[in-house]
Image (cartoon, rainbow over all chains, first blue to last red; front, side, top):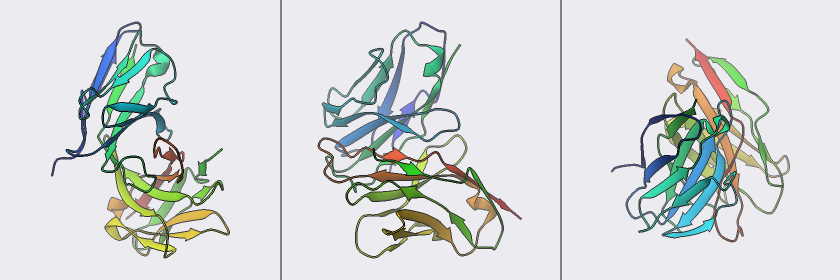
Length: 116
Length: 116
């Protein structure tokens, strides 16, 4: 079946521009996560949705970062007034269950954001 | 704070030889442990996980990992390496009882290189 998809795969933005990154989770998955992966590092948690509810946004680095999942399926991560330090790969993951630590998360291919 | 460490940035193994990629975690309750693999320009792929029970966990592509509570380790192993195993490997941990999400905490990654 279809896995997690993300678009665009690559995004180049000029500093100060706003960007929107899209994630289509696996159909029927309740939980959706966003991670940020800087070059040469492991992914770091940004935010978590259970259906349409954003239950944890403790990892968002600043108020320029905003995420939504209005209908409990597709999610958008928006970054306003992009800065060079925002350059990274943004990964989306989904899992079947609500919360629950042992549930496997399935990752999309990521969006590579480069801010010039 | 919960964390996971991968002490080796790179592991080099000859094809056909056994391989081990090391991982240790900080102690806080009973963790759930994961291994993911990342190929170039692709998202993270789930390999295996430990939840409870048998300390030896078998996963995809012939990989296995052994949970050792006394040493707080979860090393990834394979009896006979293939060139196609060359990739970036991430160890990760999540914890039960996390109130609102099952976010995963990733290690910094180990690059596995298998030479023919």
